[in-house]
Amino acid sequence: MAAGYLDILRARHAARLLTGTLVGRLPNGTAHIAIVLFTRAEGGSYTLAGALAAVYGLATAVGQPLLGRAVDLYGQPRVQLPAAVLSALGMALLAVAGFGSLPVAYAAVVVAGVFTPPLEGGLRALWPSVLGSEDRVHRAYAMDAVAQEVMFTIGPLLVTLLVSLWSPAAALLVINAIGVLGALSVVLSEPSRTWRSAPREAHWLGALRSRGLLALLGSFFFVGMALGSITVAGVAYADDHGRESVYGWLMAALGLGALIGGAVYGARQWSGPPERRLRVIVALLALGYLPLMLTPGVVAMTVLAAVAGVFLAPAIACSFIVVDRHAPRGTVTEAFSWLVTTFGVGAAAGTAVAGPAVELGGTAWSFAVAGAGGVAALIVLLSTGRVLAVPGHRAVAVRGPGDDRDDAVEPGVSQGRQA
Image (cartoon, rainbow, N blue to C red; front, top):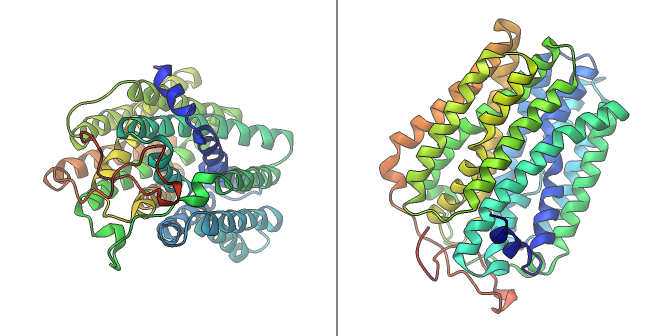
């Protein structure tokens, strides 16, 4: 299992790009948690916490495809680093200003969300020029998903540690300062500086003119909704049990389960269309979310959270391949950014619904939102099977490591078999 991942990490620039991207995405990966904890510490209600997290998610949803398109047009360094700095300044404003003025608080999270750098899509655009073969790129997608779960496992614990050592405001400041350093590491690397997108057809819809991509995004909206609702539901569960640390353990367990599932998924080669495989994975993902509504004791709930996370990373890794197969030529960063956007909108909807659900029906109702989201994601995939069965125009050939880096382009038509 480890040999394939080590082969990728030994490639020149790979470890730096992966680490820098993960560190750079730390603010985005922990923002909902940090915002909820900060709001509660300042005396805000669950509804306000959910609303702020939802606004942040929606702002990220707006910014990601716009910044992704800008990266495709102008390159990574000219977009990623300025965006990271502006996003960090937005969170710093929230931490310093607090809730003395609600409009200022909302404006701060809007700025932080809109300017969240599209590092995730940028990394996936770089893998072909760094790794060369399609099989290695697909394994890198799985490793990418696993590494994200490391971040989602460590991130909540890091936030709660910073909160316990200092304060929720300090957690916001430190996490975002670290994120800027991660983005800086990526954009100063050779692959990022020399990467250029493939030529693209001028079209105002960009990546969204692909029907297959739209179907995938529709499904992953509901996956994001499930994850967003768990963010609020987990806080409510921790409050019910009188210990703030319970929240961090639940989120870490969810990430640990996804890490294990992603590691196993990426360790083997899969045959058959990835679209069909994705339907099976999402069905298992939905099945894992439903038992969370039982809200048993802390130990049992932590185990359920870990089980619920097992199929998350495989679903994400498989979705990367589907995006690659359906994204129009020249839109790779934008297409992957739309996937991030879909998660953002879904998570925003999940947090917005879960907050009132806690106050109206208790913790179990907020976890029911997660179960409903997983089921809805599966229904979308099943109902759009014909659209997803026909891959779109795959972009360009995967370059080998010896090719001209100045011409490094996005993933697309492979030199060998399809995924």
